[in-house]
Length: 396
Image (cartoon, rainbow, N blue to C red):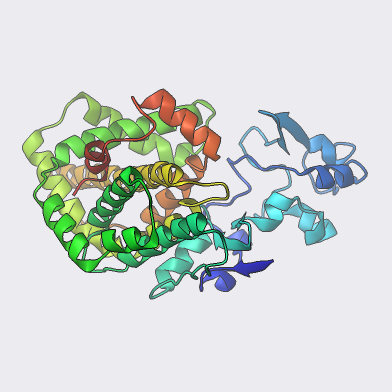
């Protein structure tokens, strides 16, 4: 079967012990059945801190899935102090489970082809995008049935839409969602109908109409504040990602209680100007999410709408987490200036902060499709949002 992949795919290399946010910690590491059978007959390396009889003894069944049992500090028991895998050091790469071997690669198998991509929950992938001038995604040949090809056509047109570098990504996301909602209302979605909605004339009219719909930055901030706290609840209960979540959630909780509106508007405006430095990176992130997650095997137009909601929520929460870091630092610096009479440069947002929250939030929101629907059903009035709410969380 033919496999297609983005142009950056083959450039990826795991940075192993140099990784700032290792995938061997604070994450569910699945162990497939074939690996488990092999591990039942293999003894652990003598370098392990806790010695058990077989490698399989380091696994546990959790929520119906066999996973590696993490240590109390949420590290994989096979992660050595030098941040390398002691299993690989002792037995070679072939000993690893499928999850460890494949990550951060992802494959979707469609009827007539397979699509490979890389997930943003790996820092090395973010670094790769940052260093790339642009990323290019392959087109799907018209080999499937017409209905399926039209779904691929919609995805292709959305990717083309996101190439418009003169338009902020927030505006493009809102345009994309509006078009999907409109297409879903059509009795028949043909290639001609799709091309008409994505024509330069139609997009220009839509862009003008959206520009006239005000979205209050404080309302967006308040809603994103609630979303971040809600997404973080279970992870904080389990003591996961505390290094990243505790500081921003503490700030989020303060803002949930009270803030001075005028100064907050000014802070959001200043943050927005500085965050534009990462517009190229966030554009690549969104393009990759659209390519890899918008359309999945057995998908549908309704499913694409829900997937775009999830992508938009990811983006909004990532941006808000970075804002909370910025706002917290800005306040600390302001207090320092008042008390010490000195100044400190807060003119930029460190890349490491943006990368950290891209990685952590996408790990936190890396739900299976069934779990996404369950979350939306439990958290919102309807699984499918109205455009107004979508525009609210995206903001700008």
